[in-house]
Length: 189
Image 1 (cartoon, rainbow, N blue to C red):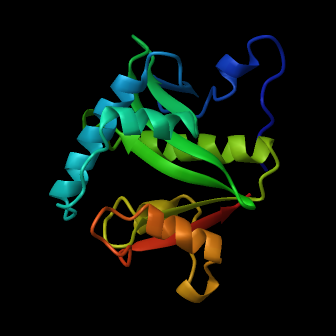
Image 2: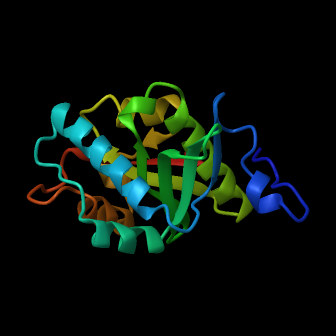
């Protein structure tokens, strides 16, 4: 069962209280944070490139900002100064809520931020009555299928992927790739 958002004047600022690990909080993106999130995206992309995806390149800032504007963006921020340490971007897509991007600054990795942000995305999707969260991810990286399986996602067999999700999987494939190394996954809410 997805927790209900808090009621009251400050509900938006406290909706994700209790989701983040110690020393962090999860909140919606605030004005002026695009450059900081772009730096996180760039660093996370470089880490993936070093883990076996050398063709990955981060989007230029203007394209990244356009991406952010089309999504609900949750930010994992450090409690002591509010600086972003990670982000998740998602939006309603067909019958599901689609998690389009999850990025954690490598300096803040392995602390539970990715898991916490996905839990917060699932809660947000549930608050708006979406039946599931779906995504596409790399099948051959530890931060791909194994990570999402640990937090309740299930890979769809290629024959079970709806055409709209297949199109999204191909769209999210890196330039020059046919997307065959990506898998569509779903978590029912």
